[in-house]
Image 1 (spheres, rainbow, N blue to C red):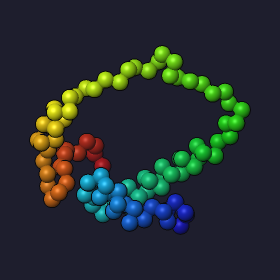
Image 2: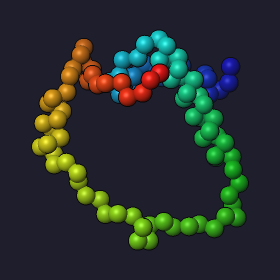
Image 3: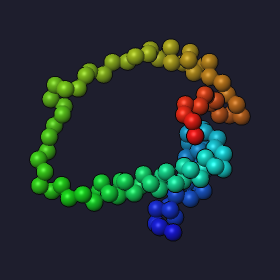
Length: 98
């Protein structure tokens, strides 16, 4: 078992589930654990790249739009008031087939 696999344990998945207020089935917990280990591997790969001689580029010079709110705060509260709660969790439709 790798270090990443030891870090991604049932306790971590339970904590993430609680923080995000998402109830996960056993199969979803197992899949999530594997996906997090894979993501940590990608991050390790990126951090191991030697970019010491690369030139720094800045994208912020006139290329970014100005932030502006899409919804007013009261409208957001109204939308949250319409949320379906089930056993303390916000219930929403599935957005992908798993």
